[in-house]
Amino acid sequence: MASALALSARVHGRTSPNPNVGCVIVSNGRVAGRGWTQPGGRPHAEAMALAEAGEAARGATAYVTLEPCAHQSSRGPACANLLIAAGIARVVSAMGDPDPRTNGAGFARLAAAGVAVTNGICADEARHAMAGFLIRRASRRPQVTLKLATSLDGCIALADGESRWITGSESRAHAHLERARHEAILIGRGTWDTDRPSLNVRLPGLEERAPRRVILSKQIVDAPGCIVIAQPADIATLPGDHLLIEGGAGAASAFLRADLVDRLLLYRAPILIGAGRPAIGDLGLQNLASAHGRWRLTDARMLGSDRLEAYERQR
Image (cartoon, rainbow, N blue to C red; front, top):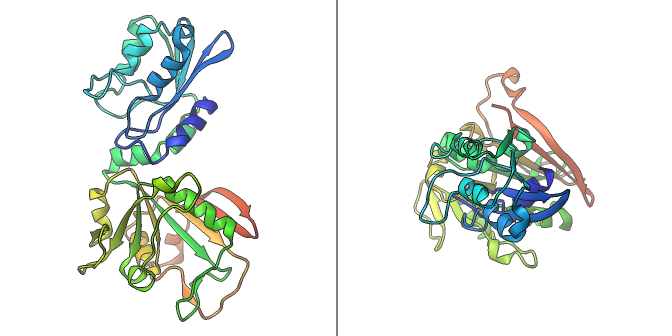
């Protein structure tokens, strides 16, 4: 299942409106087929893995990160039917599909055909891998990641606005990888007016994965090719299941005040700025007690001389 989850990460942010699913088919102790949902959502992971496995799929076990779909679509056949037709003997799944067209029906169809079904293997890891899809299903909005690159004392720029560069090249490369894993990227009106950032992906081989640019502004903005939204709640109208917020302090504060940030990426450089521009403005906290228990550390690593910490909102 860990291998299937790793395969699903290859297309994080590229499969909407479908989830990024991974599948591994094992026959006689050997991997016979591997697959992951293709960009745009089709073909599904199971179809790709079965095509690679061929006749070796008969009597094999399929490890898949989400319940195989049971509904017919003009874009492709139901994966439960494909697995049955291929002669798969056992399906091991990480979690059920919340889509009401499949929810439980995929497992039921497999079992009715004599396929052994095991569910719940690495469920937490699967929920993390498909968080964007699950949040869109549950809350009708994309998963929101807020990225902050700061000094040790929490500044994002000098007092005059100079911010290039606070973090080092390794952190900036990692941030561009994050861009490639999101369908949309948002900045505030002030950042757009000051910097006119390209917000593209500058990593060799990933240039075509640049996210759609979004600007948060209540006024008309001269920004050809950009989507403009007036308030954080408007993210429900954005394409895709993953939104990355990159700046500035006003936009970050607005989304934090609205409690719409699901994931926080904090890149901290070993520098002190002093009287600089803070990363976040007023959040409307009434007391310190309400600030505790909201964020859980999920990752920490060094990127060159910088430290990256990832947090998830506890809801």
